[in-house]
Length: 294
Image (cartoon, rainbow, N blue to C red):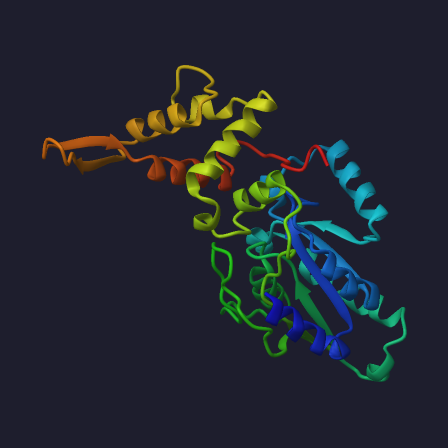
């Protein structure tokens, strides 16, 4: 990430606008203070992606926008880039706004150029590559993937070459690796990043993430998991919860007892935790705003 940040800074002189993409479920957690350099020096657009998975009550949205303004972020869009075919946002709003914001400020060494270049930045696995492929399709009608897309953090490793996403006038986008803050401020911040796949699961531990999710849901009296996992009622013990999920989904480990040399069947808690995380990340447990207390 440090190397990627250095590459991004080296390319900044060739950039007209910065498009930051973040997860709408955690609009504040994980937004790197190092990005402020980019935001201050160039026009800035923030896309809060995966909005279809986030609690989008009007009061919540207004509260998020107000807090972001206090942080110097004035231009915010809530997006679901996986459904880009159904939206004119990329064609009629995002790219025209890139051009408008660029033309409204001095372009320094890029003055007079009849082209625009935007850099896409953000934490890992929030949809940066999806955005580039989507905006390219929306404006050039090219459905192939210009950049690789994955559902795990760390797919993009280096700052890319310029990718053309529009022709009239030419607009280019530069993809960048996901950058996390060097120091996560607290455990809850880190767990929220983990739940949204901004950190690889194995670094936090699937069972730890499921444990935090259960705590977060129970604290807000959100018992959607009870019906989804066919439980008798709310559970406040993660071990009990994961055991029930494992049994109900027939996730069992065959373990040999060293003392008796007998094969025992035990619930596979890690497999159960993965089932829980997949359900949360796909929206099966409802739309949430993990940063509702920030």
